[in-house]
Image (cartoon, rainbow, N blue to C red):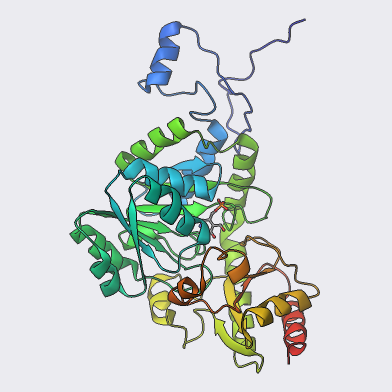
Length: 390
Ligand code: PLP
């Protein structure tokens, strides 16, 4: 029995959206052609771990959004945000190198830096990324990467990227920004001097909580090194996921605009609630990053995550989550559905109390990722749950 094995190739018309090619391998006409494809001296596809057209279409879409004016950036897509982060760090660092990372960084990145990378002789100093002088003081003559997360998860603290780019440049290091919480619909770090922008595409870029992926954007010379490490390590973005993530890009701007507006509405309505110790959202003038966000974000877009910290510590935060009736508790963020999670026992479970304090996160903090629902209905559930804590 034999099933024919040649499909497509050279359509006369262009499709409006990318095809999903599941093929793990591509037919060549000559042995030399395959050798050239694998050497990279000839453009085209050979093997799906190396490149696949749907993942390339997604990566190119993100590069266009992150670098809309100069259009000189390129991107590589990955199987997850952590795959993008770990591959980038492994591509650019070697034993003895040093990283300065935010004290407030995402738990997975924190663990990678303190665990696996430390095991391979790469040292990290965690510093307050909103204090550029503190970041500068943490730099050593071995610093190769200054890492930032803008916005920080989940305090929404925002680094001044122009200042951090200057700190990195004067140390001969690169500024890499995990921009998952902002997305290019709010802030484009390359415009502020960053060398690399990374995303968990699982969040806003995909936007529907139905696909996992990651992406790194920057200039071609750096991306060549990152691509080589990706090919070696193998965390390729699968075609079906790439298709869904690419589709998310088309609605990113309208989704994020609406989500930011609803988040600001909820922050203003809940600020001062007697059961809350703190509301973290940069739309509030008292938020420590309000001024930076005014400068660095597109007008009126202060992010779509807010953190609500009830009085009463860790137990109160968990009880608040459990009292929600219509807002589901779930990890992850950036989707069309609003979700809540108790940060200290989920995204930041790797942080002890001292690390939480250094990150500016109260043990009670509940992260709310605001979706596309009617904000009045969200507010009703939140206030009802807060009232149960009194
Ligand atoms: N960066 C940030 C800021 C995140 O919040 C996450 C996940 O929550 C990641 C990276 C990791 O992304 P992924 O879960 O797609 O590997």
